[in-house]
Length: 111
Length: 113
Image 1 (cartoon, rainbow over the protein chains, first blue to last red):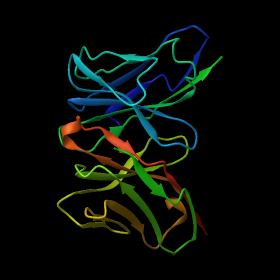
Image 2: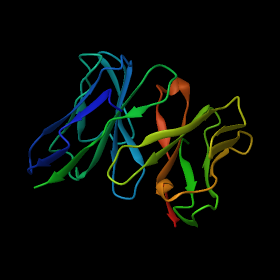
Image 3: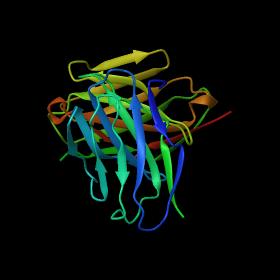
Image 4: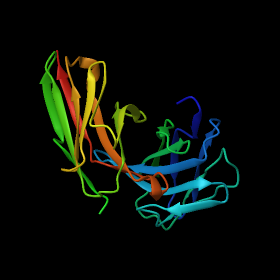
């Protein structure tokens, strides 16, 4: 959706390096989400946030961190503790009780 | 549990035929069931959704049915076209769980001309 912007589109990580994926939305949505998608797999929830300055772990939070300092921004950091970070990362947002809509994703690979 | 089982994992149909994808969930508190279509390398896009107070919803060639007693819901695509070829994901959500969506594993639909 045009209102959810993820950057960069492609990202490469060196061993031992932390990298941050950006997600910005101008839809005034309260809730934001991060999902990981592996080839041929469904989407798995990493972290989600229902309100500014608050977030909760999803099913696969280990090795990731997030912050929600502004309503429109929900960056995801892939830390060096995440040993298998190669995946397609999708950010989504939604208004309360409304469907989630996704950004175009960031494809992360290991150098 | 919150899991959702989606079947089949791959589906091949001839153009003009119907396609049906089924999902089964276990959380009786789930009350919202969206379906997403994902083309290769792109983001998932919502194509239809249904809430628990409705048994069926239709939008042109696409319909979704929900059986809350049996805890399963299905996507029906009629008069399939080659541009329907994509991966389709079902999901379910419980509103008091922060809007979390639990996704199925996906069905790769191939429509042959």
